[in-house]
Image 1 (cartoon, rainbow, N blue to C red):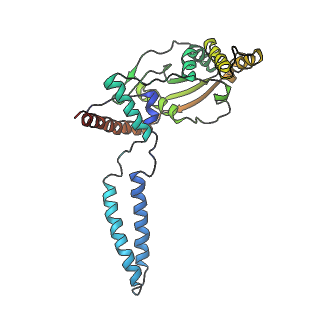
Image 2 (cartoon, rainbow, N blue to C red):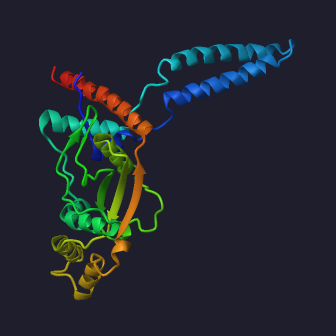
Image 3 (cartoon, rainbow, N blue to C red):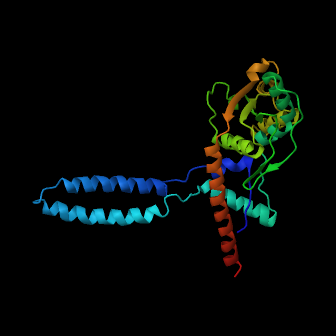
Amino acid sequence: MKKVKVRASLSGLIMTDPRGKSNLDKYNDAKESLEKKVTRLAGLSEKAIKSREKLEPEIEALEINIKALALVKDEVLLSESAKSLAVRMYWEIEHGIKKDLTSKYFDKGNDAEPESIALAQDVNGWDVIEKNSEQFENDYLTGTPDLVYKDLIPDIKTSWTAHTYPLFETDLSESLYYWQVQSYLALTGRPLGVVSFCLTDTPEILVQDELYKYARINGLIECPGDVELNIRHAHNYSRLPKKMRVKNFYIERDEDAIQNLYDRVDAFNVYYNSLFEIDELQNL
C-alpha cells in the first residue's frame, strides 16, 4: 500500500467528523436499546403473551446487530472533507496537478508575513530569530513551522482586516489551526504551541487591488477620494498599540490527540489507495 504524508496545514481537514453517527455510536445505541428491552421483557407477567411475542424477536435482532457492529465499531470513518483532500492530493502527487489556492487573504498572509513575525516576536518578548525553513516529517505528517523555539512552536496568522481579527475571542474557534499546531508539536517534539493572530498593515499592492475592485464594480474609472481614504483606513493598523495587534491562543501538546491524528492518517491512506482502483477501472 502506498503511504502518503499529510501536510500539517491540512491535517485539520482529515480530523473533521463525518456526518451521521459513527459505528461506535450505533454500537452503543444498540446496546442501550437491548438493555432496555431485556429489562422490559423481564418485568412482563406470564400473561403478557403478545408483548413477549413482540419483544423477543426485537431482542434477537438487536443481538445480531450488536455482534456485527462490534466488528467495525472501532473503524475510523472519514468525512467528505477528508475524502476531498485525498482526491486533491491524488492529483497533486500522481499527476502533478496542484489546486489553485490564491485569494486576497492568502496573498496578505504571504506578503505581510515578515511584518507579522516581527510584531509577534516584539509583543510576546520572543527571541528574534529568522523564519524557519526546515521541513520536518515523520511516518504520518510533514510540515514547516513558521518559528521553532526550544520549548515553543508559534504559528503566525495574518488577519485580513480588523473584522477578521479575533480580538475579543477567548478560545481558538478554528479547529484547523488547532490540528496544525498539534501536527507541528508531533513533528518537532515540542511541548507547547501558539497560534498568534497579527493585525498588520496590508501591503500597498493589495490595497491597490481593493481600490481597483471598488471602481470596477461601481463602473468608475478610479476610486473616489473619500472611498479611498476609507479603504486605506481599514487596512492601516500601525496607528494602534502593538499589544492590541497580537492575539495569542496557546495549545499544549496532547498525546491522545496526536495518536487520534495518526489513526486518522492511516484511515486516510486506505481511502487514498482506493482511488487507484477507481482510476484503473476508468482506464479499462
